[in-house]
Length: 339
Image (cartoon, rainbow, N blue to C red; front, side, top):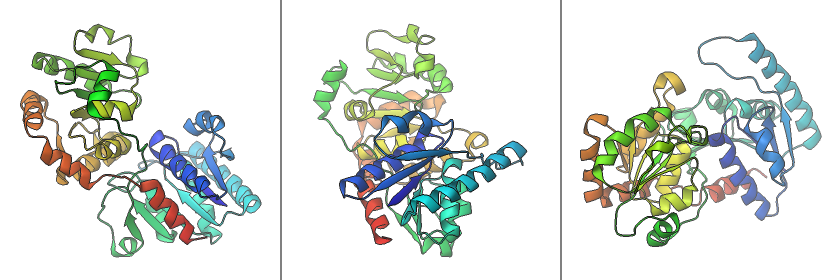
């Protein structure tokens, strides 16, 4: 049996679920260990994957928080009991504070642990777990110490590997096939900053736009909708990215991996490092260096959009260099090496 753990956000949960499905296709038994009160608690009961939920204290970069420390200790104790009962032969942790207790206990018990880092910068949980882990899977190349580099491979970030012909995708979304389509994504919850700043800069271009504002912001920004400028609370990512010609987005690992799979050029507006420890800034730089994206500049946004749309092929080629196609299979292959 393979134990999968990780969560707190979709960026940690969805890659693990993709690997779980790949392992099940291969006839392997899986079990998911998630955290109480987070995304896993809502989504795992909707799947057929056996699972358990335990306390998971948040690992804080800057301060000691007694309540979180207590939850972490409770989570470690619960993880120990669960691993004694399930006896997994290998563990995949996709990180986040939810992925720490199960992986830490697994390492202490001598179970092979494979870590998966989604971002271009190692998160705190992954950094703590990496020295004892059997392997470190990366979504994109990351500069590592020699010790960690020896156990690391770039596997990519598992995504839904579904593409549609561009003309078909635009038709299904109700956009003309002969005009470039801009896609704005602020992450699964939407971005208040992008919702406020991008529309007045993009509307004068008179280009079709599909703008995901987030479900919680939908009514607030409904007034932005007009002919050619579509507002949505949530979009189907494979369909929207198949239709789009340019993405304007934050720099979350999942969004960028999907854009790379679709060879979709991007203008990126990463979160401030003060909000996420620099993960999105590192992601944006990685995709810029690969040639698939540029950092968005509000002062010259119109010129940036026009420039990329005029010459998209170099950006498409850059995104293809970081395409995660086959990532779930590669991670499953690696786990099978431990069995």
